[in-house]
Image (cartoon, rainbow, N blue to C red):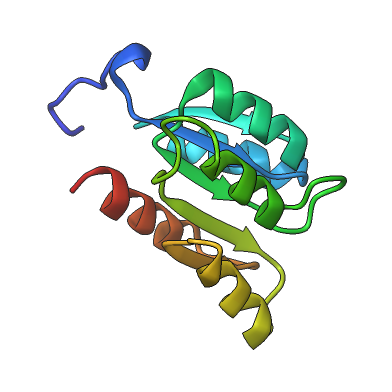
Length: 131
């Protein structure tokens, strides 16, 4: 037991997860939701809408999603007022060298390929949100 009580949801930093795989979305919500206020979108268009409403402090985006993909969603979210510098972590099965380059050029702080180790992803999230 850590000794410090968890922050109330209203005081937690906000993460927007865009992931169309329900199992991965549930895992991310469960693990990250202990320390952060996590909102989950199941596609890129929903992510853009929720980013407008929730003003997240971190985007965790899958790239391959139906409709609007993660790269396009990231670009559109970054065009929204106040969200032009929100950090991005791409979480994707696209692991080719050109895919990684596209992700980094899209402004990603990290590019994590699936399958991934949850501990490593959480460490990257904490490094961004708990400086």
